[in-house]
Image (cartoon, rainbow, N blue to C red):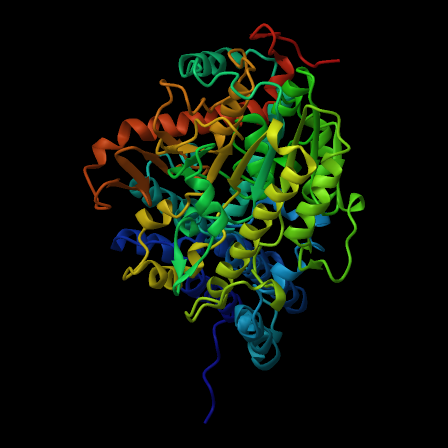
Length: 632
């Protein structure tokens, strides 16, 4: 029986359809994108199509079958790499790749262990469309035939592809107004525009950001300054200067979330020392405190602590803007007689820290070369937390006083593996080994903090220091919601629950002060800088910072996340839904509307300051802008 001859553009159709189907299946199986109605499902289904029609349609200009087939296979392979890259990245960061992330190549070696944990044998299926296309080219006789397409037919084809794009954007705008101008959530962009169009949009935004700096002249500061001044919180006279001239030790608790504090796992206490500290008369423990990081994770948290500004929305600000002018906490303390430093037993170039710390005016970076790191005292990411604490205190003893130093812990880092001798509690018992191990590494970090306090007391540094600790970002991403629901005793994790899980611990310990107590204010990492500086008696009334002193009576219970979600004392906005914070149930959207505007404005002003490098035009001593093109 003779087979009917296939249409002459069969290979093009196979390329488009297989990639389209693969992309949609990837959306449904590999990304946790919430679909609430039929319209959103339709948009998700059609959003890859316009780009695929266009990019594969370029093959219509080729006159030989060989060149056409090579082009189609090459494009198919490139798009599969793009999709798979996002899948692997999403498993680790619960987010989508941005252009600056792709240029963070000097991090790749250090990220190897974590990245390897995000790759599985069955990932070969993400290249199914490439395999099918190669087979079609090899086996179908039609693939060997050249096709000449008349210009009018090509024009019609590309008109249809652009019509599909406008249909997609029109439906997206109906479903999510101002998507391209007011959205800080990459999931929304991918869900409505598609993976491929999102990356094109990302390239446009990056180009725009570079142009924004080149064109800035300082005049943009007027509106930003007025906003900061109008939202400024006066310091609390009872706490202002209470820690004046004390050493400042700020500890970044890697991946530590607040759900472990004062809790147990299978009857085992998770953080016994931090639990005790939360009730200590010299400690302020904030139990309603949220991280506000983006793709930069730990480095974003560092940036926020130093500047009370958000990291950039599209990559680690440590990479994207390390050449900027900043008015960091370290710089303020340099001017107040402090010796400033960072203690971190890792490579100095990791996350571009060696360059960024210079921009932040940190006087000394004690990197891995300052520590004795051996096979016995290190694991995974480097020096274990307990020996890190011991060796760091010895370094502190050599510092001029008063000093300001930040410490970055490492042991509680994804994928949360540890040596048997460091496992002080049994793992959790779920089907998710990442979550199971997390409690063990948190417990080890807790023990290291206990060791730090012990060594500070033995060294004589404890009495004249203030010790600040904060969780830098989430440890358990939404990819592990099933196991987290099991631990929390819930049927499932809702967007409300997920936002609440962004709480991280925040402690301010002032030895012998006797003024500590649990604090329940809604607060975030942006508030750390003004709070610490006010405790040290440093006035920040002329600083361009978006946080506020947590002890001020004017401090507002309002925290905005980097992706646009926010929390107040009564409301929570997540997944484009307004929730009653007390009940966790959906409430009238109108209640959240005023806060949405405030949240967007806060993020926009932060981005303006960073993308335009506006602080080069600002004099923090006078609180006024100096309008000029470049600072010599």
